[in-house]
Length: 417
Image 1 (cartoon, one colour):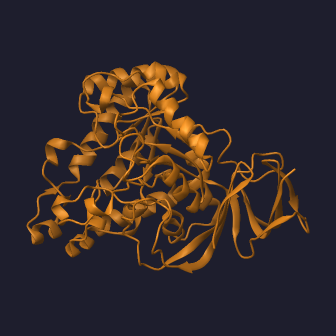
Image 2: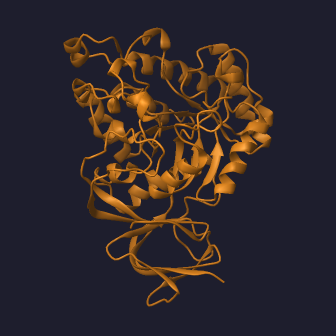
Image 3: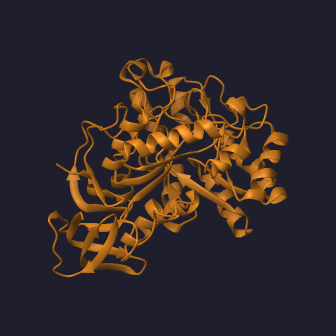
C-alpha cells in the first residue's frame, strides 16, 4: 500500500477553496481533511491543490522527429508543467492517420507512465488534404479529437464529409485556421510592425476567414467544432457569436498569445516565431478577456519543440513554433483568474473536451488521484526545461506562479527541487 499526503494546501472545488490535507492511497484520493498522516508528505503551504492540468494541443514529435522531442521527454515536460493528460497532434512522420499509429502513441505514453497520452487523429490521409483518413480505425483506437494541425483542411467538401461522419459518432473536428493562400512566404502578423520591418506578413483574415467558413459547415452538419490557438479579436467575436447561436463550438488560446504581441518580432529572435503569429496589442487584450469570460474555453499550449540548430538561424529561416508546457500555468496565473476559473480553463474544460474520464475532476474522495499543487505566489525564472528542446519565449523572464508537485494516477511524477 502506497500513501502520499498533500499537506497544508488550499483544496480547490467548484465553489472555492478549503484548507485541507489530501491523502492519496493506491492511486485514489483516500481522504480530504485535517491532520492526516502518511509516509510521504508534500508541503503544500500557500499552494492550491486541484485537478491536474490537461493540454489538448501538444506536439510530441514521435514518431519521426525524435531529435526535437519524443513521448518520454514530452511527458517529462508535461509533468513538470502540472499536466496529467495531453493530446498529441498528428503532424508526425508518418502522420497519425490510422488506428495502428494511434495505438502506438497510446502504448508509448503508457510505457513512459508520467501522463496519459492520447493522440489526435488526422482528418486527411497523411495530412495531405485530399482523402479522408481512416476515421473509423482512429475512433476504435480511442481517438476523439481530429485535426490536420499544422495545416488547414482547405477542401470544403472534404471537410464537410469529415464533419458529417464525425458528428454521427460524437467526435470533434479541431481546426488550425489558416488560409495558406493568404500566408504563403509570410513570417509574422500583417500590421505596422511588419511594414516597418519590410517583412512578408499574414493578415488576421487568414485565420478569421477559415473560421467563418467552418462555422457555416457546423450549422450544416451539427458537428462539434474546436478552434485551435485563437489569436485575433475578430476570431474571438466569431466564436462568441457562434456560441450565442447555440452552435457546438469551443476554442482555445495558447499562452504566448496571452503574453506577447507583434512588437516582440522587432528583436528578430526566432523564439518569437510561431503560427498563428503574435498579433496586435488589441488582439492580446481580446483573447485575454475572452479567456477570463469563458468565450475561449481553455488553454492549449501548442507546445512545439524544435532543436537548437533549427531555431538558431535568421528569423525568416526558422521553423514556426515554441515550447510551452512548463510555463503555461504561470502565464495563465498572470491573468488574475480566481482559483475556480483558473482550474476550469486549465483542467476541467480541456478534460471534458478531450473526453478524459479520469482527469479534470475536482478533488473528491474515491476519485483517481490526478492532481497538481500550484503556488500562485512563487516567483521563478525559467532557464532550463525538461523538454528536449529549449525554444521558449519565456526563457530568462521572471514568472509568478509555479507547479510544486504533480500526481498522476497516485504517483508523484514531478516535484519542484
